[in-house]
Length: 229
Image (tube, rainbow, N blue to C red; front, side, top):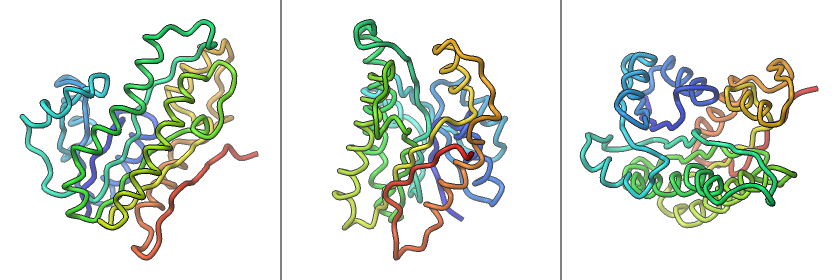
């Protein structure tokens, strides 16, 4: 049985991953932005532990985590939480850039840094659920894509730095997935949302678990997942 810290477990891909791990008896530690959200997660995943830390304020994560009970070792840290705000470069204000870069890049970097001792002890695995936008930038997606391109760079550097410590690092690049975030994206785009057109979150969960379950003699570094025909 492994021990896993998950961000974004409350919805979408994060929920699918957390449920699959819980169903097979894994120990879950779920990051929540505040005490109210932690209570909701504890009710959603009986038996899971919760940790409170706001990814929107990564400079306070060290203080927040320092006042809580934490796992002694971690077999994985799964970065699944994220935010998206669309807009043209000509229109998008600095605050929108800051929100996305903070939640999608700076917070995962800081959270990984803080839990590296537990990951090294277990020779664990860091999984970044990135996005197709982490490989290419389309109109209206500049700020989000920049944060996700940065997340790829973070993963690549971390992989090289932690290889000798036995820590594996995987980036997963999902295409459009049927989640609440995708519904919000469609609303921002002014398009009708039909979840049946997009990837089921369970399919992305399968991808994440495949990376985690790979024997120790191999490592999935980058994996793109696209909606089927």
